[in-house]
Amino acid sequence: MKEKGRKVIATNRRARHNYTILDIYEAGIALVGTEVKSLRESKASLVDAFATVDDGEVWLRGLHIPEFSHGTWTNHSPRRTRKLLLHRREIDKLTGKAKEGNNTLVPLSMYFADGKVKVELALARGKQDYDKRQDLARRTAEREVTREIGRRVKGMH
Image 1 (cartoon, rainbow, N blue to C red):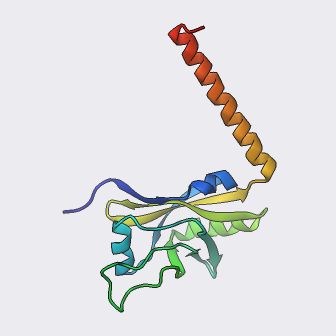
Image 2: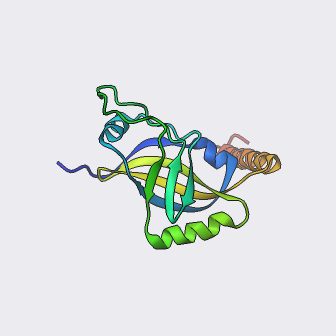
């Protein structure tokens, strides 16, 4: 029976806090069997992960997929560099954009899409501390406004 839909394995919540997301790409990922089995148990960490473009290929580094619990000597190494599968046009576009103005490639999430493992890769620019404070202040203000509107609708004011 073929799997349908989207099942999230791991998300990188710090990425949206530390970076301004400019563009998002969906990429396949080249894995070995024990890695897929470990991912089916929803075990992966995107915390220190980032992607690089080397010789026209995109590589995901720092992704941690723990060894498969029932694996043998054929088990994978948890932090090995994994190849991302993208179309040539997308890779060329990423290469150009990643080089201009200190942009970086950060994985936002990892998920199963119809049985295949996919990575949501973001072209991102690092935020400064003042950017983070501005975002926090804006979110707090929006929350206060919605709360106040809710109170008025309920007739509490």
